[in-house]
Amino acid sequence: MHFLRYFEKGKGYIRYRPPYAEYRKPYWKDGAKRDFSDGLGRIIDQDRNIFYKNEYGLFSFTVAEGMIPVGDHELSEEQLRIVNKARPAKALLLDFGDAYLICEFLKSLQLVEVFKSVFPEEADTLLSLVMHRVVCNEPDISVESWYDNSYICKLFPKAELNPSSIDGFLEKLGSLERLTEFFDKYYGYLNLGNKSEELKKIIISDFAELNCHIHESNAKASLMAVLDKASGLPLHFNQFLNDDDGVAMQETLRQLSGCIDRETAEFVIKSGCDTDFMIASNIPVVFRLPANENLYKSLVLAEVPDIWQFENLVVYNEILYCVKKVLVKHSDASEGEDESSVSDNAQNKAVAYVVLEVAKLGSDMAEMIQEYRTLKAPELPNNATPEEIERVEKEINKFKETRNFRFLNCGIFIIVSTVDVPCAEILPLYDANQDNEQMIDFFINNCNAIPLEAHSEEAIRGQMLLSFMALVAGCAVNNKLKTFEYGIQGALSALRGLKVEIKNGWATVSAANQTHKRIAKALLVVIPEKFKIS
Image (cartoon, rainbow, N blue to C red; front, side, top):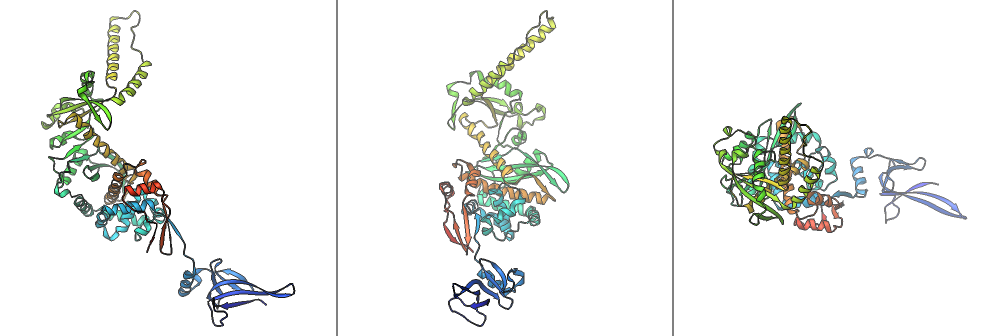
């Protein structure tokens, strides 16, 4: 006789709807009566013989039909509550190291509060998108899957990250009011309103042309970024659609006029920007002279032969240089402009610094020798006419001049400055531009700044502002991790190996290795082992 037995654990048999059941089947073995029993787990619906057991899940059972799976939709709300309570809690395994350490570091700098204040009603969405750009070098289309597998989903649980929500969010974020509000709060955070004495070096980058697509039409977006050397953080960015450099420069200076002092600011600009406009605006300019300029060739031929003098030696970053200073007119250094087209201010004298990098001299010379081994000077043909002799002699002289210039140009570059600074200070001043190049590279390649595709200019501005916030966060982290041998990307990659298991309201962090601990120490963040989570 087969039957079901209902009971309550630890209390024996009870007739009236006890919470547990088992299937019993008596049988004979070796002349003795025995019972086969199989626990059916918790009773969910005794009238329909529905039970729940961790081993089998939710099912119905009868002696005639056996076990049949049952779906949650067949239960009432109260029954489903009982089942969910009986089900074991699932452990959630998330990427922890990059999200937690970066967020805690940004909180310690109060940058998270600055970002939140711009869009408080959708702060979780904003911060999730910013963190995605910082720690995950992937397009926005992957943000949902990244969010679900990262500890960010616990830090910012109210984020709306489906594609349609992101499009609407970017349009709202890109309004001119929010853009102005962000920079007002950001400048307040950097304490620029007081024109601090430390704010003496502002770097304006080259204009990076970005292709963008707005409402079924293509456009060029000129991007200009400004770096504050005092804090090491990006200060400002401007994005101009189908505009020229001069207007972009003037508009940026106008927007920055309330927080910089032109008399003490140093603008470091690479060749190719509107240097004449900068000089006309009484702003110091430092740039590298292109090697194809006539002034470059004349300076090399005139100044390099006697540059190897003890008084010209300069040591910078443990590298030996020879630097020679020469006065020139800035109009001579302008790129291909007639002297009549240059303003009177641009006619002011500038200083050219002819620089020989000693460490590069040998490699450049070896490359030149290898090249000229395969080249031969023109030769006079037999029975040449006077015209041919004159032509070949000119070619021979030109060949010798070119070879001599190549020889003198080994290891040489020339910096032009409108401000006379000592030779020992020109290299650090020019080298500051490298920080800005790295910033622009991180902005374009790691912050999803391109490609730009949107239905409106507001959405373009929203995307650029979001990328700028990610750039601020990335630069803040990078300033702390400069000593880490793999840089910010290597650090983030290493931190992704640090996981967290969330179960029953508790978060248990996997064991941190020495690399994780070094990064955490650099960021001044403590890695927890176990903590309560809501």
